[in-house]
Image (cartoon, rainbow, N blue to C red; front, side):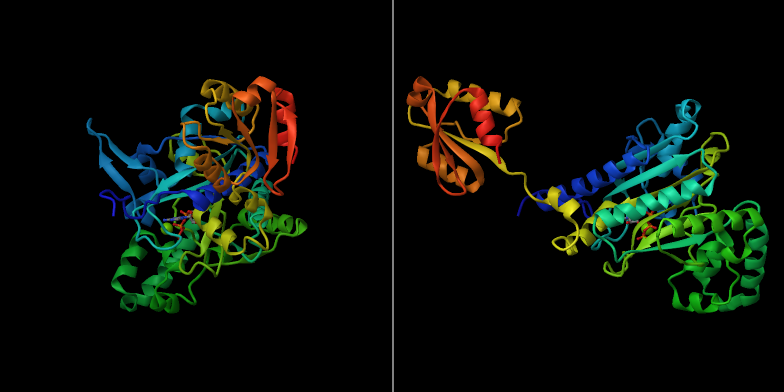
Length: 428
Ligand code: ATP
Ligand code: MG
């Protein structure tokens, strides 16, 4: 066993895992581009206060799961637990909405949360996500959900269900919270201690509590979706009608509140039955108040984030049958040409030859370190090359060599002119 091991819950990605995560990101990159979004990258480290102010101190993500530390100059930093707050900070800091008031950006990268590791839940994991700014109309919510829907389809995850909720906003939440709080007050001591604490901090969170007793006690609780203001209701109805026009099925879940404080209006999650407690593969919604919370102007915004590992786990479970798109990333790219050095070959000539081919995009396998021809051939067989050339003095002098096609063992004599070799090995 090696002396050093990766930190608990933080995975090395290699082989199929690495190819798969990159594949998920590539599929998302292409789709997000079709929605007019530009890729951005924000730093891993951010100030702690950014997440406290935006995601909210009472949330699990900020209250319990953040990797936080004090830097040498005394600043309180965190490893980002999510990227929406970071993107909002970036947009405000660089005044990006000045040049594009309807900016759409997307990202892919690692996030960090100190949770109990299990399948589909890690301490360093990857998210892909999109954020659309400046659009108050439900069209933005519809497009964001349509993008999520097409991501799921492209990955072959057609048994994932999109659930839609609505947490209302400033013009309906205070009145609703009054109703919820009186309902909770009338439960009195029946609520468990921990739930009473949640009720004092953020009563909405009780609605999606996993505690069976709390669920039972709140079965008849007033729900935000039944108390929407006229404008939130109209927004929600337009959203449903747009999704219906696009043929996107959603299941309405009146109890969905989402974990983060910055949501208002529609929220959604894509849910699977196949990953146990790790049921959500992506989640998002509207967060019109977020930009203001991080120091910007009032600006509507909507987006989602997806967990790349969970999307990959699901896609892999049905890979052969459904996800051809992802399959192409999981298949190893073939090596076009293997080059072996015949005994006594001039290695510099060979190096020039393979380097020129590589510059032209040919995938070349070669070991020119001076091993026996037999050892070289064995290695080339292992790397599954489409073609093999054995080159030495004779070949370079005559400018001719035997090109072996590995699939059927046939050989043809070809000229070693660059264009001829290129054409021959890239033919398949
Ligand atoms: P959960 O309820 O599973 O903890 P969440 O509500 O905390 O999820 P979000 O903050 O909405 O998750 O993040 C969006 C997506 O990121 C999730 O739907 C999930 O796919 C993924 N995700 C969240 N936390 C983890 C984690 N610790 N490991 C792997 N993926 C994660
Ligand atoms: Mg979580």
